Image (cartoon, rainbow, N blue to C red; front, side):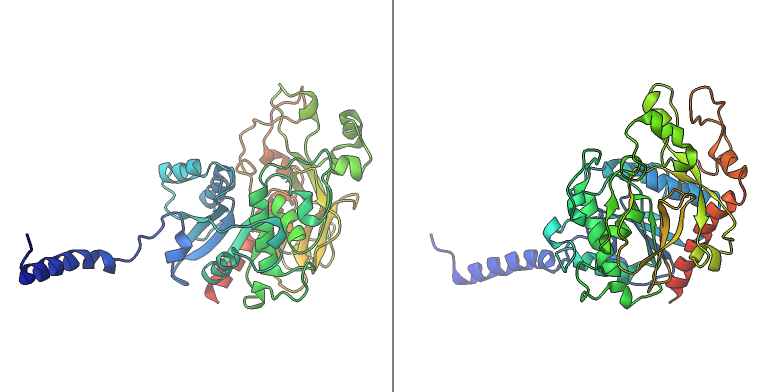
Length: 383
């Protein structure tokens, strides 16, 4: 049975009217991609951190709570690649359960792979968005970078566990700073030369690799020529960059880090800007087995181990607020006075803070890095 023409027209109009509101609605914002809808500028200082695992979130929360980072209007955005194995669902849960409303997340879903790391690629718009909407960046510590990223074969002591993290972060560094991989590439910081970037431990190594440098894949075997734990222990703590005792006594719950002192460069940021003296030898918390080898483009060493064999900090020749450090001033226990740490069997428990206090100006040095970086974030926001 045929409908009258008028009825057909009425029904069609009704269907179109019902569908129209749906057609006009904008796609729902992705709650895991904060930067997409964040304004380019608002009243908050905005810091991007890569790899927002719980340890790094807790570290920042602790630094804010104890006043070491004193920026009341701070928003932190945790950036990661969807193919990283980190448990970021737990990170979301940690943020929610602890009421950290100042912490947001931004997942990168664009494809990234080794052949395109050091050129314009599918993640380039993500890096451009960070430079547009953030006031600074931190690259945190973590596992070994695949040596293929810096053009070398993989030695047996190198442990690769998170390749997509390294792909994303090394490509980000190249986009921000440029590198010898393509000297004609225009770095994003050319448009914001005062943009602050801090690389910590792995992040320090990523600054080097991303700008075209290489790494020593194992310090004790390659630099010191030692093949046994006992021979490493005989070197003494100033030549340790993690705690060798933990390898001999795995059941004793010894800390895996090591404290050693620095040699500060006469003309580096620590002396010229932060006000420390080259005769100061601040103690720092260290946990790594790799080190800088060939320096990346425009990076310059500003601190070393006391024997001069290991680069411990770098600055950038062109961009004044780029700092890489091979140690950990962010550790949540660094300024905690509770004595619960032991380096070797038989040691009485002590605290990281007590170790720092025993060798002035170590406390001020570790806190001074955060004061400097916080000041650069605020200045970057103002510009």
